[in-house]
Every structure is written in C-alpha cells, then in structure tokens.
Length: 420
Image (cartoon, rainbow, N blue to C red; front, side, top):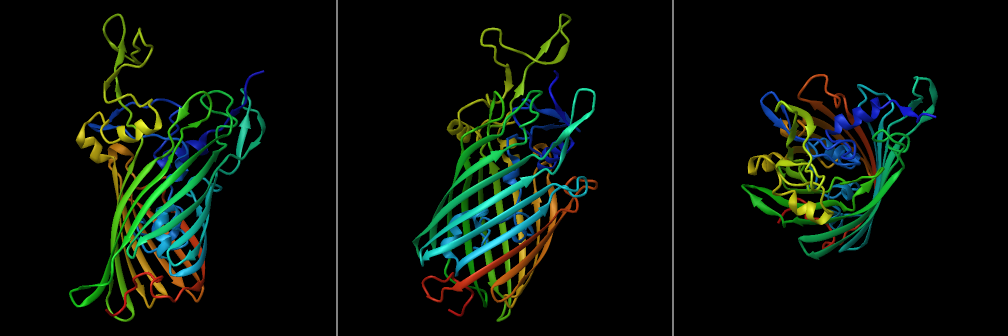
C-alpha cells in the first residue's frame, strides 16, 4: 500500500510568507537571483517569529522597549516588572495569508499578574492552525482531511533589580503536528521541544527634552533558546532569536504624547554555507552537491557546517556567513515605529519592517489605531507590503486587553510622563 500524500499548498504558503522553511526538508544552499546571492536562514516552527499582537504589530514589529502591556511576554517579559496594573490579560486573532487562504489563523492569549511592586509572573499560549488540508492517495483520490497545527505555551517571571532596571526569564513548550501525515516524503510524527527566554529592560527617570518631559527605554531579549526539534530522522533548529532596541516617549502637553521605537533583530541560528557541486566525467558542474568520499559529508566551499550543537550554533551564528561581515550585517532585521496618543484613550501608530532581499525580503509598512476604556483596550493593525501580490498582503490583527487594580504606590508605578 502506497503512503498517503497531502496537498502541501497551505504549508508551502506558510513557509513562503514566513520566509523560512523546515531545515529537514532540504539543506538550502546559497542561490543567485538578479546578481545577488540569496541565502536565507531556515528553521523549524517559524510561527514563533510571527508578531502576535496588534500594538507592536502596528509599530513595524518593534516591541522590545515599548511600555509594558499584557502582550509583553512575547517581546520582552522583563518589562512586566514595570507594569502599573495588578492584572492584565489580552487576546489577539490574526488571519494569516488571508489573500491566498481563508482558514489559516494565529491566536495569542497572554496575561500577567504583579506579585508585588518589584515582581510579576506571566503566561501565554500561541496557537497556529493551517485549517483543513485534504489528504489524497497516489492516484489523487481523497482519503480524508487533516487539520495540522502548532502551539507554544510559556510561563515567565520578571524582577526589578533596581529602580530603573529589570530581568526576566520564561520557559516554553513547543509542539508541531504539521509533519504528522507528510514530511520529507515519509510518514511523520508530531514534534515537540522546550526553550527559554532571557530578557532585560531599562526605563529611565523623567528628564527634560527641550521644554518637554520625556523618558527613554531600552531592552534586550534572547528568545526561544532551546533544543532542536525532530520531525522524522533529522533534528532542526528552532528560531532562536536576539532582539535589541530602544524607545523615547515625549509628553507634548497635558493631553498629547509621542513615542518612537527602534529594534534590531537577529536569528541565532547557523547560516547555510555555499556548497561545492559535483562535476560529471566531462568536467561540467552538476546540480548535485559534492560529497567527501572519506567522511560522507557535503563539501563546503564557503561558510561553516550548520549541523552543530545548539550552544555552538548560537555563537557560530555571528561569524559563519559565507559572505563575511557584509552578509552577517544583512542578517539583522530593522523594525521601527511611532505612536501618537491622545489623553491616554486614543492612539495612532505606524511603522516599517526591513529585511534585506538576500535574507528573505520581508519589507512592509504597518498602520494601527488603539482605543482605551476604563479597564479595557482595543487595538487594530494592518500590514502593507512594499511589493504587490505579496502573500502577507491584507494582513490585519485585532487585540482585546483588560487591566485591573491599578497600583497607586509611587515606587511601583512606571515612570510616567509627569511634572518633575
């Protein structure tokens, strides 16, 4: 009996839109397109890199140094030690690739609780579903349906170490069933792994910027640091990531505030090398990668072997690009956003995300608005790709959040825009 096959259209679109793919599917080597060497970094479970909430999503995916909110666990959990509410919970729904497929969604449920003025705990659940996929046999006859999904669940803790500085840690369980029916031409299984986040956050005292009051923020987050995930016979890196950023918020007057944020983002995963290709008897290059007859390993022309342990892969990711320093710098994505807020009840946001063309070419503008009520808020964001007919076109997010029991103690409040 021949194995079941599955229509991989949705999974392919998902990988395309994320500009990532399963490393176990194939070892991608650098390719030439338009005179440029394309060499994107690939990982498993790329849904972990999809921005899950509307507020930071509207800021071009800049979020490591924004003010704390119920979605901070994804961006920088250490921010929650500065939260000015006792409890917070948020839910976001994101129709993904809605221009191409109607039933792919990312859901994100997140919340936190302040233990005291210096500590907070948090938890979140990320659920990504590819909707319904039809299974067929070798003749193309329908044999049933399959609904693959991926999810992660994490818990975190944050602690102020000083008036203006905090640290955070989170543990995460990750599960993927995308390969349960079909993976790499073989029957697959659900895969799972664990990871941790290590984060830090700084928030200054209020200072004078000209005639206006302002405060600055800074954040550093190492996320998804964890074991490789195994789909079939090969283990694959998960999207271990480093995000560094800063922000500045200015009180224009008693009712109007303006903030600007900038993030730099880099995957802590080995870069695919450039392989040597075998030649035929006439000396012509073939499409097959050359194999070392002694070791049986693929021969690397430039770069380093990506099949290394996790810890080595993290450090290697800073100096293994085949193109040297220039290519290493191209592996840094830049996110920037601005936010205008009126009387703490209405906000308008805009941003831009830039990834170099050689590393995936995700380049898009973002817009968003937000409304705050006595205990709740609603945020909406919209993504506008720079290129037409982009799989991410018409992506929007809607977030609902609720906050309770404001802590009025002076030492516990975040350094809001107040008169010095």
